[in-house]
Image 1 (cartoon, rainbow, N blue to C red):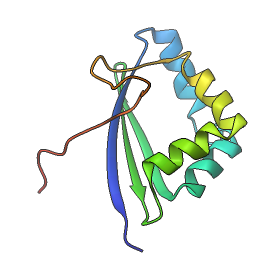
Image 2 (tube, helix red, strand yellow):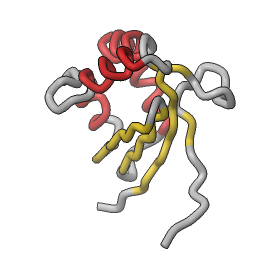
Image 3 (cartoon, one colour):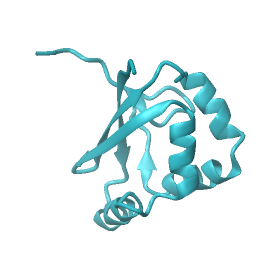
Image 4 (cartoon, rainbow, N blue to C red):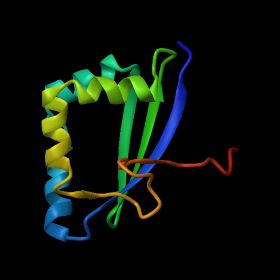
Length: 113
């Protein structure tokens, strides 16, 4: 299978209690099964999220079926994903340079070994 990597960033609200709660929602077994299904159904074969202070870094490995616009449409039509996204907005804040209506911002790769 041929995969492609996408790297994105997002900030959490700078509140230690909110950050701990966010981490608990993302601990093994805590992400709602409808969310992991929607991720896989979109062609995302692997995903990792890293945290430093209140900055999140997400890496996604996607297959050839992945299309960000299609994923956005799928998410908009899925009430459980919308419920999860509303809940996550309790913890998240867009980066100042994020385009209107977007939370996660695509990162530019500037080095590869």
